[in-house]
Image (tube, rainbow, N blue to C red):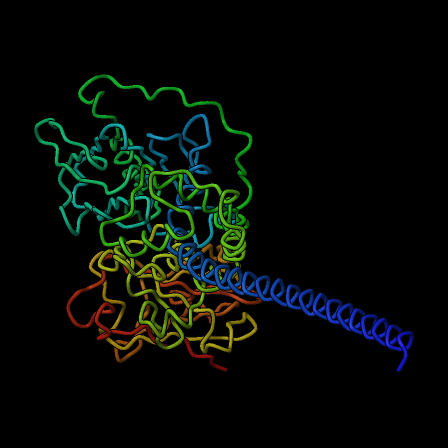
Length: 499
């Protein structure tokens, strides 16, 4: 082999080796690129999974937090609407002043749903975070009344009244969290767990002109003044201008339900500053901290991890669905269903039963303790069958089995929207003061229908509308001894359809 051939072969070998090396580097670069992309995708997938998990956890916590906060937020929106006036008028009054309702609502008055024709209300919103307020109740002269005092979480923390303290003249100082000081002689201290207090007093009234006059005189003697003005001539200071930004037309509950998650929890955090959680709420407070809500501090959703913010934004709808679920309430024993009548068994004092507390806020804000009042209601003789004025119904009470109440009871007729029903005899309720006509065996039948059951039965007639309607029974100071609604030894009677 000559030198030329050897040189050519060596050059070829070098070229092949170089080509192979070049291919190897290209393949290696491709492999590295793919590996890098796979790694990036894996990191992105891991971050996405982590974000999704964080969002899900935040959403679950926020749903529970939404339910926990619902009474406090609803109370505040209600307070804004009820106090956004220059002077007391109807059911509204500025902070620190009584609103005195003078009559049962007129049949065409659709301001308040489920109005009653049994009691007159005297209500007030108080801020006891700065100083105590002193409430004076006159001698009620044996008349039934109750003066429930609600904290900002809707707990009835005290309830003076005929059942608990009698009907003599009484004076109470409502003190806020952390207050200490000296009170005037003859004044009993009631400690409010929160800075906001709502008084919703009810005084029994028969509705006659004479009784209206007597109750009005008692209402006029009820007073509320700050401790610093007690014993001195006191004129409430003029309130700030009516706030045009407050929605006075939309129902407070609807306003709350329309709030987005960030706004809802921002308001909640602000309210926590003067209305602190209870000591037993510590586990919930720890959960709140995971989504940026800390009592005493502002809340700003824009400063949260985006995944947490998304979880909070998604909370209102499932939170509302969880609150309003009556089936769950029945299963849990917070609501009862008997003979077509539903009523809430645990009201006024809730402890850590947050779902029950939110449920009552949703369906009946301001509910009393069951020892003071229970309100069974019925939309039909069966769960799936609703009442209709096209049919006739009878509620039958055996002798001695009328609703057992120490104060009074009533059954009120409402249309499908929970308002009074116009009728030819202007009767919207039958009650313990009705003069019923008994059957020969001493039992009583209440006739529930659109048209008169006949002159001989009209004393027992509760007029109904032409279409759908709702019945609500009220038992004030229900008997605690058998037969009793409180221990299920008495149950509301079936309302049966008859031909």
